[in-house]
Structures are given as structure tokens and as C-alpha cells.
Length: 231
Image 1 (spheres, rainbow, N blue to C red):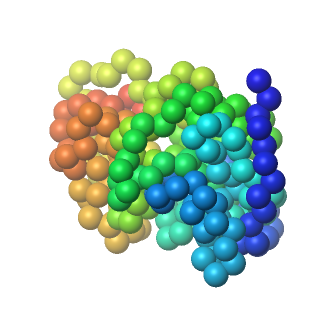
Image 2 (cartoon, rainbow, N blue to C red; image 1 turned 90 degrees about the vertical axis):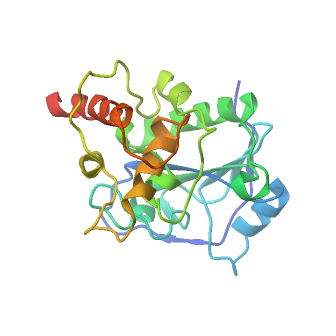
Image 3 (tube, helix red, strand yellow; image 1 turned 60 degrees about the horizontal axis):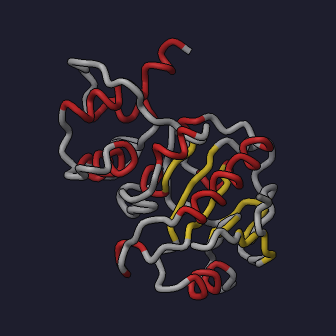
């Protein structure tokens, strides 16, 4: 089924730096009481925030910023040595009230539209699986979205993003090895380690987001790093 795209332009964008590749996809939730409030904010010049797209809970896709332009969605952020995430990313907002206003699951129609839209984006831009990220991955000290209810595993089943398969036994990865995957740790970023661990758990171990590193986290990270070690 074709995506239901609706033009909803935002003035909040600027030029990408010359030569900057588009190689990151960042997923967010809107974190506002209603879709109407979220769309109004994303298109408000005073707010100075935007995304390339917003996906409603019914699967409608609101188009805000052309992909060749830099949308203002990630804020202060970091991934794999890069501090200007907006410069090289596409940002997608998913309508959801978020943790502040009554966090709920993402409906099937919304995720189906996200899958279709993401496939379109990946055809246009060389975004590797390990660079399909949540806002909390790139800004763990500030953000929780898209949160522990987001179906990362399902996205990976459809070729979008990375999900660990079989977990190795007796993995020796420590929380500091999160930097090898891409997370920002001290001294690169001034963020408490437990916040980074929590962000990792929200993405890859949502059943337990205690912020405490354990053997399951170590095995999960080892599985994520393994393809890159032999690639």
C-alpha cells in the first residue's frame, strides 16, 4: 500500500554542511499530548525544532523538511565520534504522548508506515544498520525516546537497524565497550555511565532498563559488535 504523505512544511531547517553524508536515521516520539500539538510545534518558527517526517498513529506521513536539508531534531548529541548528528541524519517523529503524558505502544499502522518510509530512505541514502538509532541513543543524558515500547526487533526483521541474534556465552564486554558501538562516553561526552547503559537497554534489552550493566548486556553488546569485527 502506498504511503499516505501529507505536505506539512516546517520553516525550521538549514543547509547541510558541504560534503556531509546522510548516513544516520534517528527515530523519535513526539512526546506531546496530541498529534496536533506536535505538528504545530514542529512547524513553529519560534520553537526552532523540526524533523523530516512525522508519522501519525493512523499511518499518515507528514512531510516537513526535504531530505537534502538539515532538520533540527537531535539537539546536543553524539554517535561514533560525530557531534553534529543533524548534519548527517534523517529524523522521523512518531506520534506518541511519551513518558511524560502517558506512554503507549506504537500501533501497527504507524509501524507499517515507518517500515515503508524507512525502506524508501535507505534506498536513497547509505545508512548502515548500526546507524539506525533512537534519540536516546545519541542523547542519553537528555532523552528517552522512542523508548522501551518501540519494536526495534521488528524493524530489524525487515532489514532496518540491527538486532542481536544468538548471544555468546561468557562475553567479556564491559560498559566502556559501548563506545566501540558508537555511544558517547566520557571523555567524549559529559554523561553519566548509567544513563548510557539505560539507553542501550531501552534499545536492545527493554525488559530491564535498570541502568546496571550485567552479563546479558555484555552478551548483547558482544553480539552486536561481532559482525563488525569480521566485516
